Structures are given as structure tokens and as C-alpha cells.
Amino acid sequence: MNTNDMVAASVLAFVLLAAFLEWLSGRSGNGARTGGDWKIAGLTTVMMVVVQRPLVLLIIGLSLAAVFPTSAGSLSWLEQSYFWPTLIAFFCLEELIHGAGHYFAHSRRPKMKWAQTLQAFYKLSHRPHHISGDDERGQISVTQTFTNGWLWWFIMPNYWFQLACLYLGLTEVFLWGTVAKGLWSAHTHCNWNYDLYFHNHKWAWVRKTMWGLAHIITFPTQHHHHHARGKNSAKNVCGSLAIYDWLIFDTLAIETSRPEVYGWRQSEREQKSVFHRYFNTDVKQYLPR
Image (cartoon, rainbow, N blue to C red; front, top):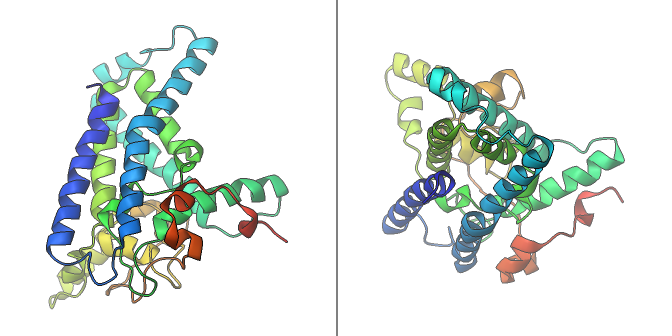
């Protein structure tokens, strides 16, 4: 098993365990999750592990080798001499790049036509991530951590950044940084809201401390509101570092209760076919008429 596979396997193991606990506790029942949701979660996970991650890494390797023949492993000295600073820089940069791509997918339509077309692919590819359960009863689930359209892995720049670092020799940095990012992202997608205990604690200092931490780190309820159907659906675009939502993207939203309604409205075809939900590339609905 190579490093790329180890990252996918470790995060996948956590997702499966959390999904089992969600199901065992009844948080996936009563329309919160449908058969189609479970199927697309399985489809996207298999595609990510078997096709997308290896293919992106192959493209990066071939491209860099063609332009810079000696680039493979050329940054290994960096993690050997400055492991912790490199790990921190990798984590912060990867999260910033991810936040920028995610922000673009949720932002208002740009004025330039080429940017409108590009954003349309971002929005369409991101739709499956925001669709779950029966309408009005759907809930967020840890299995949505990986759920997106098939193009998402190829158009999100942070995935290319991750794997380029791996190719350039930052093996341990990639392993620990990506696992930490993946596990935290999976935990913010779980159908649990432990942070509300602290946001609504009877002691003011606990509430204020939690409020301050939520400006730095993303907690589950913050990301639940990103998956809400309402005013916060374009907020909290960062899955780990809320400080970017706060200081860079101006998308921070801290609430003290769960959303009332989750998820985007589904079309009839999306409800009936997970393959349409996953492979659909008709972007007309997101382009100006």
C-alpha cells in the first residue's frame, strides 16, 4: 500500500465507522438518508480511490517529469530538515486553496463568460454534496465527505496541490497533513452537534470560549449550516480552518442551533438515478439565459 492509498484508507475507515454509528443511532432514518444517498456515497468513494486520486497523481507525475525531469522527490530535504514548519505550511495552504475553490463554487455569478462557464461546472459538480434524503427531511451525513460529481476531483485545485507535494517528495507531510484534514472534514460532516453543548452552556466563559474557537476552527454545526437551505448555505466554506471564513472570504456564520432544513432541492432525475446525479455534465441551469 502506497502513501496515497494509506490516506484514502484511513479516512475511509473513519467515515465507515461514523456512518455505522449514525445508522445505529437512528440518525439516518425517517427520510434523513435514502437508498440513492447510500449508493452514490459508495460510487463516489470507489471512484475516488480507484480512479480519481491515482489518475490525478499520474497526470501530475507525467507532466512534471516532462518539464522538470529531476523533480520527483526534489523537496524531500524540506520535510527532513523542517518537518513541522513544512507540515503546518502544507495544511494551511491546502485548506486555503480548498476554501478558495469551494468559495468560487458558492459565490455569485462572475461577469466574464469564461468564468461563468467554469463556475457552472463547479456548481454542477458540487450539487451531489448538497443533496441528501427526502426533501424537507434530508440530513447531513459523514458519507457526504466524499460525495460530489465526477468532475470535482479534477477541478478542485487543492487536490492537485496535495498530490503535487507527494510527487515532489513531501511524503510524510502529505500523509499526516492530508489524514488530519480528511478526518476533521469527515467529523464536521457527521450528523452530530456536540459543539452546541458548549455554545449553549450555562457558564458564560464556556460560551465565549467556544465562540472564539469557532472563529479559528470549523466545528460540525458550522458546516451543518453550510448544508442548510437558507441564509447560511453559502457560508462556512472552509472545512477545517474557520479563520479563513472569518478573515479572508467573509463567510463565517456561527449559530447556536441546528438548521431547520438541510440540502438543495432535487430534480426528479436526481432522485431516480444516482448515475445521473454523479455523471451529469449539463451546466445550462447555471449559465445566463
